[in-house]
Length: 188
Image (cartoon, rainbow, N blue to C red):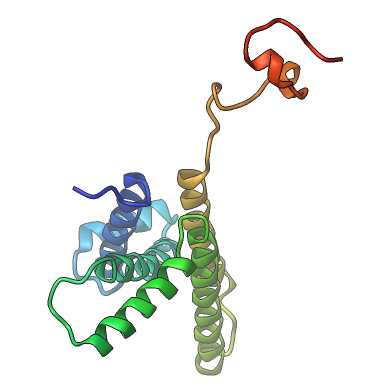
């Protein structure tokens, strides 16, 4: 089995966010009333706030899941293709892989989160035209959901250097070739 470039914790975070998104959908359209009651309890009587928070969290996860799925689909050819398709497929794969390395996935998440925030602002502006006021609480929860997902993903992907990889200050000096051979002679 091939090792993925991303930790399994990231896939677990995306799956959890998608599950929360389903729960928010069930609550929003009152399909499952016990879920709505729990959201009302958490949101101090306003289930819509929790739904918007979870919606922001899940929307970013959906966009990131699509990106990760595109990476796995383009990772290897599964059937015989014409030379032109192989060339196009290979170029697309190289382009996608260089843009979505693990080092860049947090940048992509920030871009996707920003896109969701722009869509959320557009939605709230449309609601101003309908209702006459800006729903700052719902927009704030959308924003907090997006930021919470970005923060969770950043914490999961943050590199922690181990003790054996870090170098103490004593060994930062330059060694000469005689010292590395074990002669005991040190040039100062």
